[in-house]
Image 1 (tube, chains in turn brown, orange):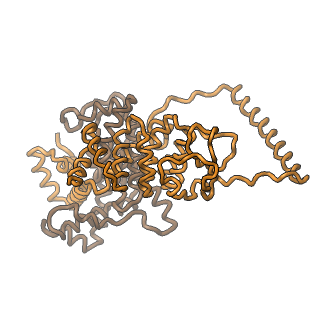
Image 2: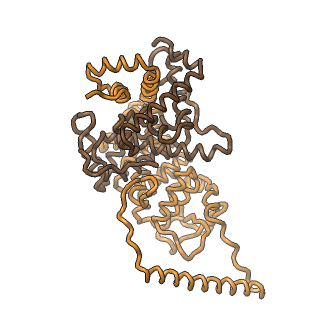
Length: 214
Length: 309
């Protein structure tokens, strides 16, 4: 379940100690129900929401737009409780990951019976990387392997992995989003990355591609 | 403070490593294949997080849809996570009253049903054919041709749409346009908000034809409702997706001055482009001039350069 309610009284400082978030003022105003602020904030967050949801669902997914919109709604509705523990962009991105993960699970459950794949392969994402083509192919396949893994991992581990890989969340941010202690999150991530290594080791071609010199 | 290895990976991806951390990062990634894979996967996802052709339209629809829903739809507890005020327990007498009313209604309905059956058995005029289920009606395709023109004159003899009946609304509805309504019981007309919520649900579940029909119904029945205003932009976006730029243009043009004005203008520009109209330039210039900070200004400028003689 998506957990976005933040503890009261937490410090309104950023974890990375950077200067105040430029979107924080907008987020607060939007949280108070100012529609023009909500509009401006959405315009600023829309690219992040769209790209994050696309990362989770895969580029070929047909419902990226709808899920991104759902994530936008969840973000807007949760702003009243946002205390600035992270940047607004990271808050939005981790929300988008959790909403998209929920959608993935629903989709997987509905397609399990039909034998259809619950996500789409993204070899067309090849262009996204830099460096030599073989290594880029390896990286694109690695991203695909992570998505595949999300299907099989226990929900808590899958969420932790997705938040780390796709939203770039720190341990503390994942802990805030999932309502678990940092040590628990660390343990979940450790199990998830072990599973990722095992999955990749079962694919010699992928191993080879990833080990090619950059 | 020593950061956890996973946080070093995160900071490396964000470009926030200090010199010491950069050295530790090299050691950590060099000594653990698992952490290296995790980092590489993260870098790959970062690289993939870029906008693609067509994303402006998607973002426009996202902004318009989310804002409109935020304003009109009730919050959904399952996903929002927003705390709500605790529900107060209704007094017992209200509960008892509700039950009593329910029983009375049931008795009345049962009586009416028996009366209707008796009439039928005695050879009275047969009752009207039962209205098709709402969901079934909503799923029926509404040909784009019926909405190709932005304004449809009110007419009782308008071409019927399959699965629906087109109702002439002269004097009956506030709009002068013909209304496409699903055949449904007359007793409880849906409120603007109900129609809006249902249309949004249909749109979000991919039932675009049903969503179009419901937005259209909302606009036709309640043209001055707040929901109808936002519905125009959402309807226009859907119509553009259904390759009905003429109808879409009409909806975008009818949107008043509001929070979605940049979206409505961008929609107009897209519709005019589809129609190969020279007016596209005027609208694009409007966006660049009056909404330079909107996400559409950059695309509008690029498009204007391409349109330059």
